[in-house]
Amino acid sequence: KAGVTQTPRYLIKTRGQQVTLSCSPISGHRSVSWYQQTPGQGLQFLFEYFSETQRNKGNFPGRFSGRQFSNSRSEMNVSTLELGDSALYLCASRPRLAGVYEQYFGPGTRLTVT
Amino acid sequence: AQSVTQLGSHVSVSEGALVLLRCNYSSSVPPYLFWYVQYPNQGLQLLLKYTSAATLVKGINGFEAEFKKSETSFHLTKPSAHMSDAAEYFCAVTDSGTSGANSKLTFGKGITLSVRP
Image 1 (cartoon, rainbow over the protein chains, first blue to last red):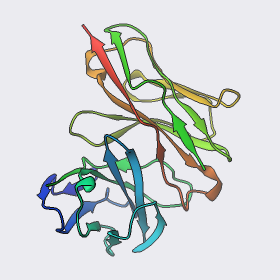
Image 2 (image 1 turned 120 degrees about the vertical axis):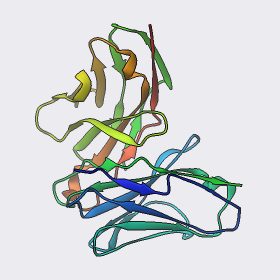
Image 3 (image 1 turned 30 degrees about the vertical axis):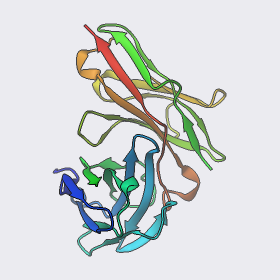
Image 4 (image 1 turned 60 degrees about the horizontal axis):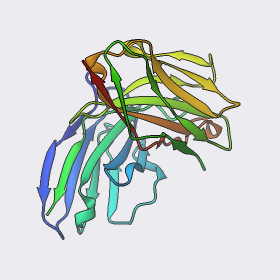
């Protein structure tokens, strides 16, 4: 099976712009989560989607949003970019919510805000 | 609330030596625990998981970890380090109490493992 894929792998944006990142989960996986990884804060949970509905949300401002499509693919959007949004954004998937706790990660999208 | 503590940010061992990476957790409900590895410019790869079955868990690449409730620990070990083990290792915990419905991973800060020839 193909793993989790994320596009693009690298992005450079300017402060104040917005950005959309894309994630395709492992085939058959219906849950998609997003995490932000920075040197200072480490890995932090952003949100999780299942069946096109946000099921869980981390402690991030409203500038961070996401959605999931009927084919389980997910996008996350960051509006009004700040320098501190520079990070590796990781997407993870799992087949379902109940009884499955481990998540499988993609390679990430490296976002640089200048 | 759950938390994970990984003491030390960097561990260096010689090739062939024992690898021991420490992880302590805090959780108000029985935890599920994971170790992930991250190679440069890559995502996280699941090494092993503890989900309340056997307390000694074997993973990929010769790694294993033992869940010790009395010590709230889940240390990762490998008997003999290989150069290819050089990477960053993350311990993570999630809440078993919701049957997975609101399961999110809480990660430690990570430990960088270096392997000397």
